Length: 417
Image 1: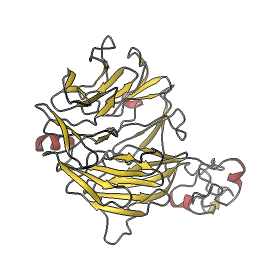
Image 2: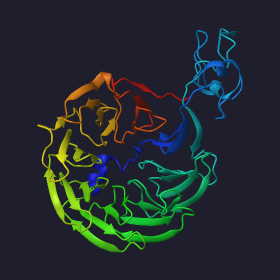
Image 3: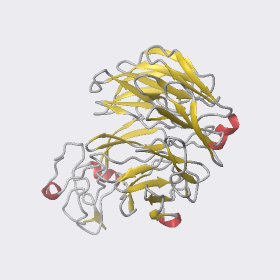
């Protein structure tokens, strides 16, 4: 699998972590290589823009307030409570931090001040946020539990290899309390079950090859797919193997559970539908390239992205096509599609964004080439939350963040100080 790893850049890691909604007004996102930040997206407004106080108690003054003069304040000037904009040493206006971006970082991890220095190398995992804790896995193999309030470290764990796969959690029996277990998979093929409260190891399982897809915890089983072509169902209590499904080529997508069926794709250009209780294959679909993106299941339809650039709409029951033809993007599809409003939003590897009718795959709108994001996008977009309303957030490789109106396809880059 060294050749495959080289093809996708794991030998020169850049990361592609997607954003996570952490609270009604917070987004946790990797804004730079190997760094994670919590962004406050709610600006100050109205009378709040006429004073020099931090009215919303986020550590910033007058963020998002409109520009008053010919010049807006930027960068470090937005981090104080003075009017810094001037033209030829003449004050441009008397407003504090006018024109400063609305999205402001509350904290960033690592800070760069740690001793010894923390180097995550890159972040591929979208960090789960449960309660007041953010869980983070780095390509360095380090796992951290961070405080959502200030990004301070609660605990850390040193895994046996790079972390490319997403993290998974199991909740308490009430599904309302804190998580009990954090599942971490590594490129070395180990699945760890860690105590979510203190990071202590509960058990580990050797999948015998790299794990690139996120573990899936369902309550009954924890599922993990490996590059050796095996999908394992494990007992979440002790990691013992219940059953395994085997295919000739590597399985690399995040497994998805829907109506008793596990959907998982891989290097063999095949999407597999497997009985969640027995591991027997129910149906499969062959395409022209890897199924690496996480499928989306809505009602009884599976929307499966492929690196051949096609989005396939299939019946969950038997894999039969739902659309007359797959939707064909301009570039390969690694990101999962997402429903936002009435549109099925799809983004390809080069940042071309499409809004589709989920019933038939017809294009409602598109932003492509010079009208598109024009950035490499490999992470999954997010939508449907209080902080986003009906907006979609897309994180591009390198840390650029975009918010998209799914009704019209218009988008803006999220700017921070």
